[in-house]
Image 1 (cartoon, rainbow, N blue to C red):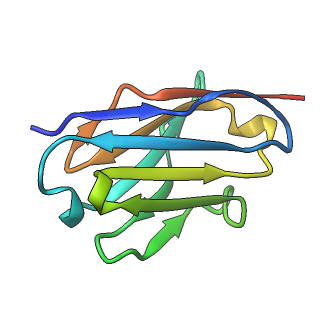
Image 2 (cartoon, rainbow, N blue to C red):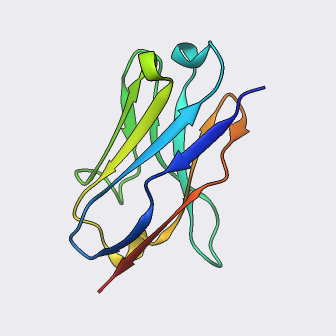
Length: 111
């Protein structure tokens, strides 16, 4: 069983930045692939970014160049740095690890 707790969401103006965190329980954090997803009202959940155990990353086209995923294995924590935020980035953001999900953190971008 892995417990995930996301934090760092909030209300920000377009063009601003936020840093999301995903803190995980357990001792196997370093071997897991970690995904950040988001879901806006009325839309399907969307994969935003992935970081593999070796540190390589993938991004959705919509966030490339603006978002950066990272991990700190010593802290059992993953991060999503979001810069130059757009209104379209408004959604609830979730991390996923080993088939487990957190409760999400809300990001709202205003004009």
